[in-house]
Picture (cartoon, rainbow, N blue to C red):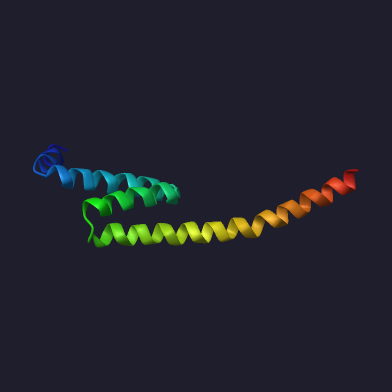
Length: 91
């Protein structure tokens, strides 16, 4: 751990901020909080605009958000139909 701390001391303030955004983005991504992760990767890209890792993760988040939105938009009408049907059956 001491070696890791020593490496962190040698980083520029911008690099420390960048690494923190990436770490937080990865943490959110790993628990499927893609919108929060996307914001962290976007902030990392503000610090390092040409960073391929942050850009790739940002793009993956956008793709996952789109996929999840389509899934929700598919399921909600089905669930609504079931609820309406149950309502009429119980009346």
